[in-house]
Image (cartoon, rainbow, N blue to C red):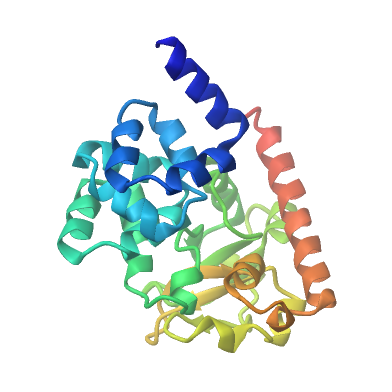
Length: 268
């Protein structure tokens, strides 16, 4: 790596947002040429805070292999927003090249129109059949490691939502108990096709950090977190009140502490 490249890399690391703002003023082809000369991680760092429309035009100027590597490195929401700005054939081609663990959730989110619950939800869930025992659930939880909410989502054989189990309850339950006995079955659920603003003031946000999302047939397709609702709203007065925010933050912290303690106990 030459001196110029080292200086550029250091600048991006130290002043990522400023670098993005500078590059946004350049033509997409010029930025694409630069991204192909730096690491994928640095390219992702530049694109994540960029306007989705501009980021999309830049990726259109990259060779497909490079574009795919960057899409796999940015966060899921950034990848979704970029792909939404692309023409169908190019978007489909990129999705075909992405790793299944990335393309699967993206395809699910892109099926939902913009500004719907489905577009804001996290499609990556930790789900288990209701017949699974607590001991087996804990083993699978350690293997999964990537959770978006403080709940285990429990489903029926047809993948419809049965209920949710609080992570704290799961950690303290008898290992021979089944999830059927632990699941909260009256948890409120959201439909993936409704506009997200219609669920902003749900009283349920006072008690739940995340709510399950289903399609109209009842199949569980994701979960929607309180912070996603807050981030999606352009009007601050529409977001849930202070009590809801406090409740969500408290549940989120309990989840984080419980999960870290659990994983730490396994030596990981």
